[in-house]
Amino acid sequence: MKKKQIISKNYLEKIPVANGELRWETTPEGKVDLLIENTGFFNRVAQKLFAKPPITYVHLDDMGSFVWPLMDGKRNIIELGRLVEEHFGESAHPLYERLVKFFQILDSYRFIEWK
Image (cartoon, rainbow, N blue to C red; front, side, top):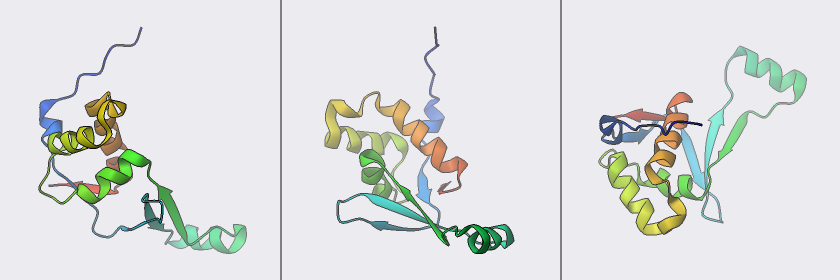
């Protein structure tokens, strides 16, 4: 049986900010795409030899697309969670577990910074 993960209150009080070097755009469907430039020697070699694209698109889901533009450097994860719950209701639950995992993934790829 898997133990339920305990989320630190300090983590929920962190304020996420989008990485300033990262570009993003909103699709006509209202989804957010993060544009990752594939730079560097090995990426250039892969682009020439294996026809890899110069830009990789990371497509966020509904909740991620809702949260991304709200990361203004003023709202912490608790406040973002309240906005997500107002917008998505019960379908967002387990709310804070999902949000924490979302921000952990974004942080691991350096898509966000913490204020």
